[in-house]
Image (cartoon, rainbow, N blue to C red; front, side):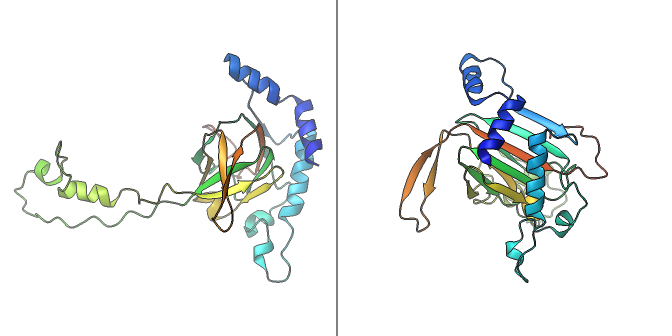
Length: 245
């Protein structure tokens, strides 16, 4: 099935082939590394959308909700077609994807089909809520505002204003992602918190390090050319995109 899909994508000519993309990167020529469609899918994308929709609507066995792929009830029960927007992307080895949350213009239930090369995708939890401002240790109204809350060049930052800014800063572990190993042909479903609050992205590097489940061994996996297909549903109140998707 994946071989047929890749052949159909190549025949469609929406993006450059792996060879053309590599040649373009070597010469600095413009590349066609992304294609986007709204509503009117190419035949291969329509077939993929139908297959993924069938998976998404599959219920768990008994009360086992963990077996449901589309965990959002609103997404899994919405009228057909489940998807009406598609993005086709091409990645050369070493290229990444900036960590992001998909635009609010799209509904819950985003699906990514990952093809060709295996890849490590990173998921970043939402930042913690801002804590309440620390009480002012020097409530004297006659104190100069610059002395009470300003930055001191070259100082240790222990003025109240800086203390508040430090408290509101990111935690030490905010940028430590949870990694998901996507193999060729894997389909990723993003629902609920994974869709709305967790950022997902791909680090720009030529290889990934795959650690064994027991953590006692690791192996280096070189990246190859990768193709991804993202399927989404436009929200009824967001028929016009004003920024990049």
